[in-house]
Length: 114
Length: 116
Image (cartoon, rainbow over all chains, first blue to last red):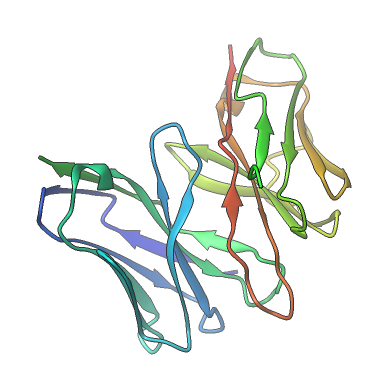
């Protein structure tokens, strides 16, 4: 099955700075790459996703880039705010199945200092 | 829609007791997933169903774990007997997938299990 690696495991930034989280995947057949944000005591929630027919997608302060040749994708958060502090997970779909299974990275604990 | 609903939110039990976690997926979703989250192992997929049929249970740790989905609106994850190492947050998630298109996965708020 798919193997998703995520780095870094922890990231601390000053408010207003940018944060970048990177992921790699192993199965070239994967074509859906979502990012989830998990706040303390809550379930993960989708914040942005990208499909393999595009290289970049942006939604206000967050953006995701995808390099299918290199099999890596990244989350970019600009102008970070304290409320961005959370655990972020990247994921890739299982193209061996069309039933919605996702493979998750280990997560990145982002802390934004005011 | 109320989202994915899990119960109980917190469960504290003693080793050897039976634990049953419950999940109501979002109406109309055809796939349901049970995940376990721990600091050591992150988010682990235990089992998932499509159209109420178990598809892959290779993530279930051992025979003490079982899951059912008797209908499209209800699923249970049972641990019998429970052990301290089962302490974790268990998430249920659901999605709608068709025509080879992976849909957004919606998570419940989780059930925090503590086995003493």
